[in-house]
Image (cartoon, rainbow, N blue to C red):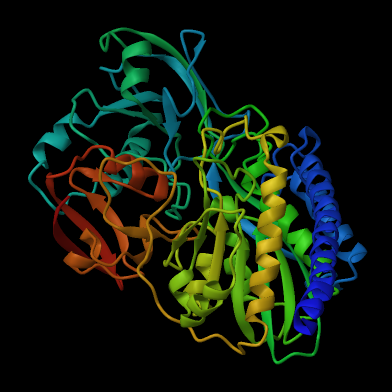
Length: 546
């Protein structure tokens, strides 16, 4: 009887404690939700014009994050206060308004109807000319169809060197400009390579696309009034990482990161619904940045003090993980990295978009932690891979265990419709709570050991075939350099390695990641072709079957 009375006395105390705990969590969650809304509403506002890396909008976001770090009492860990600046080289461009090309008074559309070649002089020319005639001190035309036919079976044919040779010869003979076109349907691989460092010739050199040829030069025997000017310029812009630190004098440091840059007006060609509109990027990645800021606020008073915490808001992620790679090459803090948590697109949890946690396989300790750390309010999918097209991949490549939190893609991804009113703030709050629990559970695990995992391929890219490689988005040479090779995929089977530079697939050459993706569009499963690469300066050829 005494035991029963004792149990009855304890039960009300336990019930009261549980109720008190629930009230405390509800109160704390209310603060998190309000802060997430405040952060995302500002970062994803039109005022910031899409936070393109190196833009005025990115600068405003940088100042906002810096102010929040200061408010939350983080120590500055950049090169200049909280800031680490880095240059983004965009190569040469023809975006200047000084570029123009008119035929009979009608302006051609750059990139669609024509584009200058990287060997072109920055100069102008005009005259009444026929594509069939070559007169002294006039604009000349060159149809490459014959040389393509003559070299269709020549595996060593390089049209780039032939273009330069033709332009130099024609300039000496009296041409004031050279307009290149292809009247055949054979692939010519004439591209604008913005990173080409070949010395320019002395005259403008312009390529007319098939569309431009049909629209503006339907009669190749006709006479056309042409007025053109080429102005190529080297484009560089300065982007900024924002870095704050909580120092508990622990032997190891945890990195908690999120990229805060987005697409701006789509100027870099990465918009999925056309350039010209502000891409606010509420989910990608104002949501991750806001969650990172909340974790900074919460962890300042954490009891999990066996690690220090380095908070990093990266820029340049949308251009190829530039900010995170730059920090790893130029670290602003002398710390012993334990593990890295990356938050990228964590604001759209829904019935058809669960929470994915990547990097599960990058340390054996993650398995132990997740066995004891659950959240009944979240449906979770685990992915073992440590790689992928977000900033955790750069740390994984540096042998740091990672976790990647992601509520998956959606119809607004990389579109101007990714706005703050579509964020699921309630479940993003739950995700922040869950990450705090994971950090607490990892507190007494010491330095986590690292494991290499099977590589994941690019997300949100729809292609008919793939080789199974991760591009090095920061590579500025000609071609597409491999950052990683997926296990069991075509690339590994034929012997490709990280560092290989892919140059040509079948008839299609490419100069960067974008033109590599375009080349893949020409193939389907089952197709056989030849892949040409450069490895340590030596050109190599591989037979490929998709």
